Length: 119
Image (cartoon, rainbow, N blue to C red; front, top):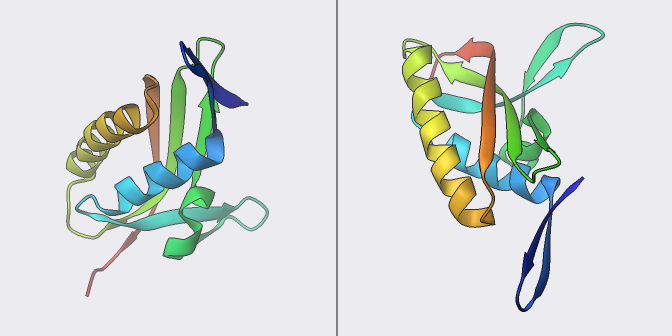
């Protein structure tokens, strides 16, 4: 599904992959986030994604009211409060994605898939 907005000049359509890529680039800038994670359901293995594949660890859905729900599967840094990281991520992503798209975020779900030590 694509986000759609009608203006007096015409119609704007935003693909969910664009929103996911932007949200991923905002997320990796947040303190304490190592990167996005890809989960192999068959084996239960979690893999840290490279920066070129940020949208693969993120699922974006739009409801009938054009509100965005974002699911983050991420790997966090060892020794940092997961609650603090999550709150920071939610506030930052909500603000920046709403400014970027002009659409409202309904929910941000965070799934911490792993912890890594930062060198």
